[in-house]
Length: 347
Image 1 (cartoon, rainbow, N blue to C red):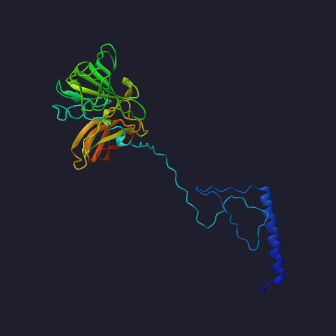
Image 2: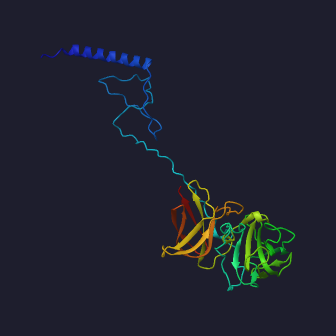
Image 3: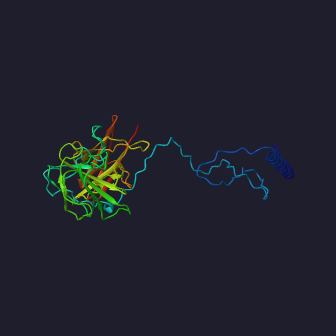
């Protein structure tokens, strides 16, 4: 088959280009350019013209930013799944911020040297008692009670006429001191309740280690013990904080504080928190309870709902079990510091 003359092929090609150009211009003028789906993460696109034999776009016409399919790889779309609730973990306060209080009892007492974990701060003892606004030290009647920090005596006597708690004669014989040291500009008060006798007077200034009274069971008390409260900002029953986070650990000891919350970050009240030494994960070491959901207050920075004091430095496992679901978290205790852990119980 013979070839067509060169001039004829050139004319035909030119005519085709002209027709194609007219069709394109008409299409652009009368028909909307179909939009392609946007690609996540790409701010702008550079159009890649569809190759044609010789057609060159007019310089004054700017293509639409709608991307055209090309062989150049583009960022892949990341699948978006249903969001999983996340619970923020507060930043623990520096341990030295308010670990001011020394032991309120002799160095070697006959009873508890450390606060009891049976009825901790924020607990109702399984609904048997008033919500606990302090910590208790079980000791024989007459055991000396010592000032754990320097301060001035505000109350020395009993609460039969002036109510300092739930009702008259709630604490029995008591002492309240205002500490010399303030926390973030706020006054700090200590209350010592259920004393068998009071050894100080209102207005007296006491130093660390001075005797302020003796252990007893006056007021609403079961057995001889010292009840200790920390009140921040105002000397009121509603303004307590957990004394465990104010009592200075012994050398080589620290504190574990934390939160037990549900998937939405809501604190779970009065549930048992169990502690294991990491070296003995099958034998529980100590237990405490999370705070009730009313009246008591967490630390302003920690936002905790449980705390365990006087913990020897080392590695531990913290466990809660609620409704058949268990959550275990590791934590490392450093001497003189507060170790923080959060346990989220999924529904």
